[in-house]
Length: 511
Image (cartoon, rainbow, N blue to C red; front, side):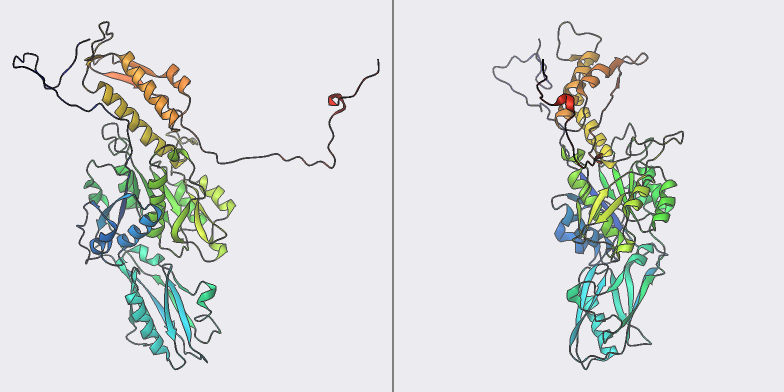
């Protein structure tokens, strides 16, 4: 068998020893990236519309202190500390409007000093209230504390007409500011100050009137051919959903045959269960997952960032990427305060048939993933199809095909093609050689817990030369995905007294 060289010529006459190096090829290893799409402040140094890798210490400077992206970044790092995190920064829409709200301070009637606690987007703000403080004093102190609390998505000012009122304005323009919740004290240690009958009452006007979200279309084009496996998109309007769907398109996007970049997006949705069901039934997108977060104390962009970080941590490498995400905590996320606003088991059952994911709130108050499904529900004929129901299938698809691609390119990336190779020349490959490489690669993936059914794959895989193009090989790969244990159904039979049947008892029978 001749030895092949890439650089050493065959006619060297000068003595003596020459060596060249080339890589022998290694199995595919994932380094999945998390891409956060969101708005930055004008004070942020990150260039709008351009992807940028961000280290933790850079977040405030690149996005601006309290920006949407800085908040997303902080939550994402709590859920995936070692992830490679990129941003796709956006400016506020030029015609956008910032959401506004209000806190009106009532006349105090305290007999002793207390602490007033409020929560803004799930973050606690506390000020002391002295016996002699007026409502105007309290309002001014509250404004000062809000403005100096790092990471809050609002700014505060004393109302120009009523000095006992605090005006709140979202830092970022757009509809997402409408979902910044302002709440009185939530915990027992917060006390009752601010509530009816507490000696100091607050009247809260919810954030509203935010309008005009940025369009991500041109920014997505700037991603080029870089791989971003997990993308967080905080906007669920039709324009931006259409843009991200086109980006992932199987025809000309990242999931197309010629780009092979792949990827998946998490999109938060703040609607009721009925709204979610209607929304989900109008979608059919396997590369997007919609996560419900109605009345979450944490804002939608933080919720989506936490989910995205969990995906990049748990769905990037085998065998973990085949395990279900159920019970994983969304660290740093505060769910709905009232139990009536949380998803019930019936709600989740409904949503999973509507292409919407689900959560539950643990007894300790933590928000945990129940199931992440994709938006895919029906095939091209409109018939129900569960092929792409679960996000784990998409993760397995990305990892598995990349693994097989690297296996093939390592072995056959620069070879001639023939029907047979009786001389076993290393520079010639055959369809049978390629088939064997694919089977070996599939065996690796079975051992890694990504796929199963090696015997069936080896039996059914087809590798053949194209009947028209003699330089082309066609392959059919029947990939059998490892599934997740979702449901264990048990039929429990109750007995008052259970005995063995007579024909099984060890009883001596008379002759």
